[in-house]
Length: 217
Ligand SMILES: [Zn+2]
Image 1 (cartoon, rainbow, N blue to C red):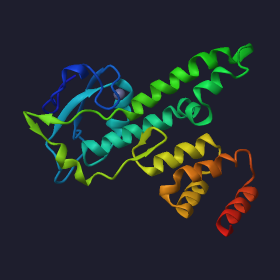
Image 2 (image 1 turned 135 degrees about the horizontal axis):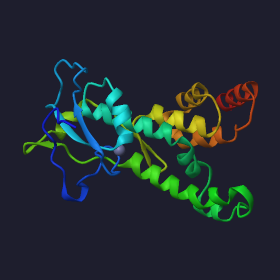
Image 3 (image 1 turned 120 degrees about the horizontal axis):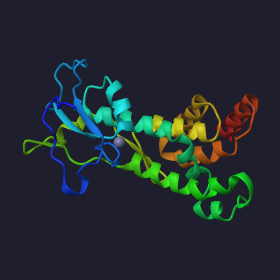
Image 4 (image 1 turned 90 degrees about the vertical axis):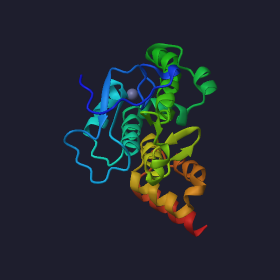
């Protein structure tokens, strides 16, 4: 595969690693892509190592900087590994080990679930490494990228990704969870999570009433 732009410098410990997720790299990703026209790109054109999985969203991205592509890739990984990441939301390692899953079809689940959670978490949390091209560190150029959101040991590209993730884990509509967060405030995200965790399996009307109680109370 041809390099479209100069390759970034890669620290020795990350040689042959994907810049997005630290898995073994399989190809190059060049930014901007040939068909992605960016007026006044805030950083020099570049290429970096990428795994096959991260390449899918990166290649589709129309984002205006490599750091925004990074966020889209993380959103993709969070969505793709939603079930694996939900293990850590719904269980602790100890609960899982002590669960009654030893027999029957759940044996495999118990053995691999926590491992899959750890792998997915590590990939989502990996922060790449500072972008250096031809000896020039371009990290300070990323000031314009929106703040990420860290909750319960996982760094989400944005609070919307965290909201979507928990809404799916609790089987409640994303808009509802968002409404709860907006009402309690993003600084009380853990409160919103605890509240919504109680709503698994509820009907829309029950959720509506619960939110009304919360706001009135
Ligand atoms: Zn990757």
